[in-house]
Image (cartoon, rainbow, N blue to C red; front, top):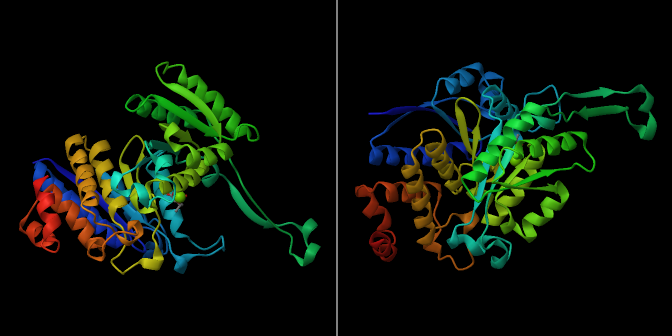
Length: 390
Ligand code: IPM
Ligand code: MG
């Protein structure tokens, strides 16, 4: 039997709760498709800081490198929030592992599940036909540039301040732009042959380089239509006419911001999965954070984590059929009316509002039914009948 080694990084907040559901779904897939998944858990983020003093311990990096794929949940929380640059932050774990594994391409698909069409804050006619993929550059730009905080005697005393100064550096190299652009064009070929490159070329030098290189790469893809948008305009277009986009490619920080915005097209950040790819081991994680406010309550939405598993099957293991199966199972569970709190609609009956564990089980059991299947759906005998009939 083919066996894959998966490194699990639950992290903080709701992380441990949702990753358990991802594993449940992987196990169901393994059983159905005769593939083995073994798991090794490691520390990252706030919990890693508490236990080892570092957000990305060497043992975690080693475990990730020795695996066939990494499944991460989320990092961070108020406990570790600090503006003191000398103290470790959970986010360093995430940025660190992306850099160390060379995960320069972050894919964030935004698809609308019909059942959730009215869960979005946008009008149904606006989100109709939305199917876009954000390709975010993940290991360059502002998040990895040189930065510093220091005292500047000149400014000291003015307005009673101490003259503190800080800077971050935004830098891109040609090869970083070339490889992410290629990735975007390749993805577009498998989709609807359109790439929209987002920059701020009217102001930033890095953006002007970005635009030139993207256009140069485009020469190798005459079958793909390329357009450019300035990031401020893109932020507006994303909520007024989102269906115009197919593949969107952009630098690290713009991608960070625009992907949170785009997630609202699908109703909740709790639905948005992501894949971070490089030349070696890939990492899969929800696009959302650790939601410390609801951690430990069993109510978090595990679907972004589960959809990250779907992406893992697709991109790391080439298991297209199994990936389609996971997607179909999520769709079916939503079609059957089940909702976690974040995606519940005004007309969702109380008995259809489910917690993290039940949501995960519903998906897993749809993929590979067990005796528990009947028991699960026994809570809702009527839906169970319809569901089975499918
Ligand atoms: C994301 C997150 C991270 C990022 C943070 C937690 C460092 O917001 O994955 O989008 O900015 O990349
Ligand atoms: Mg973000």
